[in-house]
Amino acid sequence: MRNNMLRRLPIEQATGESYGGRHRLHFVYKTRDLVILGLGVMIGAGIFKISGVQAATMAGPAVILSFVIAGIVCLLAALSYAELSSMIPISGSAYSFTYVAFGEIWAWLIGWSLILELLLAASVVARAWSLFATQTLTDFGVSIPSSLSQVIGNEKGFDLLSLGILLLLIALLATGARLSLRTLWFMVLAKLIVIGLVIVGGLIFFDPGNLTPFTPPSQTVPNTNGNTILDAIMGGSPHAFGIWGVFAAAPAIIFAYIGFDLLATTAEETEDAPRRVPRGIVISLLISIALYVGVAVTMVGMISYKDLDPSKPPLAVAFSAVGAASMGKVIDVGAVLGLTTVILVVLISLTRVIFSMARDGLMPVRLASVSRYRVPSWATLVAGGAAILMSQILDVLTLEEMTVIGTLFAFLSVSAGVLALRRNRPDLHRPFRVPAVPLTPLLSILAIGWLMLNLKIQTWGYFAIWMGVGILLYLAYGHRHSRMRVLLDAAARAAAAPRVAAPPAPAPYAAPYYPPSQYPGAASRPGYQGLPQQGAQSLGGPPPGGPPLGGPPLGGPPPDERRPGGGRHSR
Image (cartoon, rainbow, N blue to C red; front, side):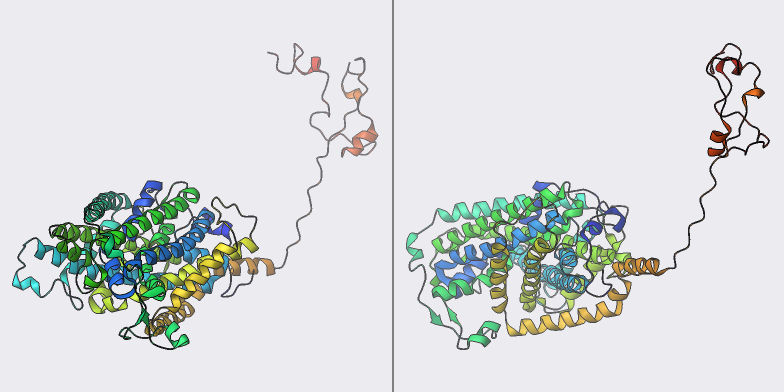
């Protein structure tokens, strides 16, 4: 194996205890827990907002199709994640899959993009949590002291609520996974009850007339958000509504579905991970797609897309329009719970990615240590601290697309990894197999590539800067401290060392020779003739005429002369 930046991590080594693959973390999750994790991260406050915003600005009632299209794209990628997580059940997710399939430098880039995705996601959602929590307190009539009004609910700058929720969840994660899992179960179930109330309550006021026209006529819209790569390639002004609007809304909706990929980071903490992790990924994604489509149908059926104001909470506006304004408070509670679970699962995944990269030597090895709680507490504290700094210093709400591009970059690598490992390692056991290979991964790559082209040029510029910084860090630290490099260097030194000749084998045991004349009466025993001198010499005995060497004779005397009474063990 070449010992350079393209060195690949052998899958047998990645999943073996000798390399630190399995059984470093405590088994916590079963299939139902993985589904709860997936629902916890995929269903946030966006479920109450994104359908209304995209219906009002981009797709009209056909936003329902936009959710289905985005769901299909994510399902294609999810199948690739399911296959690789069944083969490589370790905590690094796309980072570890890429290490096995393509090599170390590519793995570092994917891991670095995952850190971007998860750090920004935790920071952005914490800010959004503060805004929703402040709005919820106001809607319930809770007066906020003037001394606090300046430090909570802020979109940028210091914010006490976003800081508090991050500190609380970081402490929860650092002290044990089981406690955080029980908390997650409670919040996800409460969130699902709220979503069920919203769908059932909204369908009571469903008006089929609001779905007409289902696909509004296409129209040119002012370019207020910056050009995308696709705009630069095709030229012209951006369009909304029509068939183009249906597809143009999909990249924004992808952000809502992001999270199924994070379940792969829990593999080392899941019993029977090769089978349960793929199930958790697919089941949680399908449930999320159904819930998002259900809320979208409720939204556009309650109120005409023309009456929606993107600057206001769309569902609250819709319920107010039909005389059910009290549902706004229910939505507030669901939004706060939804965002809390998103932050929790994102932080879990972020710490596991950092833990895996540190275990491979690409980050300081201290981050791979496991505390007495059987969780990577150092990685949790460092990742949490970075999320706090980012949320308090940067205007993170303007960087939401950076989360999307980091995720799509990882999706691209995983889909390509399925093709690479099917070609290079067809012998590997795959408890879950992507159907219709190579068609399914190729469709996934094409769809993800199209979504990436719909991201703004500014986002691509920021992403290039982030990846450039990552390459410098790899060259400065990861390349020199890589555990694979150390192992391959040791193997090379052992192969180049001069071979020392093996010492000569010891002489065979020299069996002494005793003629029959030494045993009075033995010669008279019927059938006893002694050992010929030729046979004695062949067994290492003395030459003819040589003195006896002492010790018991070969074959021994007759049994009746060894011990009175005959037998060897007689007493």
